[in-house]
Length: 158
Image (tube, rainbow, N blue to C red):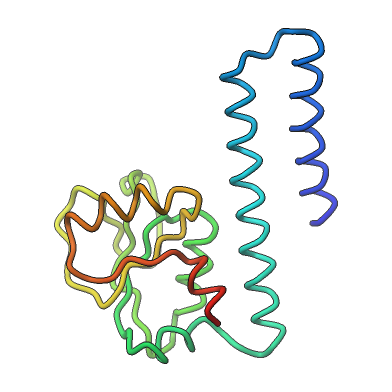
């Protein structure tokens, strides 16, 4: 897996360098490549931290129970969102629903709503789209009363 991530970084950097050298890559393309690199790096670091937690014999359930959170909504149902739902399944922490812009095209074991839908009360919303946390938090804080945290915060507070 590490080789795959390294290869992805290498390809992104190589493509950017080649484009700059030939003058064919616009500043917009470079910005997009940097954004992709930052997203991939964030995912890599989140998975690395999560794996370390598991190797210590812990689960993320501990974070939620320690803080008194019994019901959770998961924002973002890509890989990290799916893994978080899996981790909490069967525990004393209930994922009441997930939130995703593409709710209509997502199959999950929990109900999935869009950010524009009405939402049942939960103790906390965990944003798994960590790269976009600030803008998601700003948008969601206008709609809900509960705390909104990044999965990254959960991982680093374990």
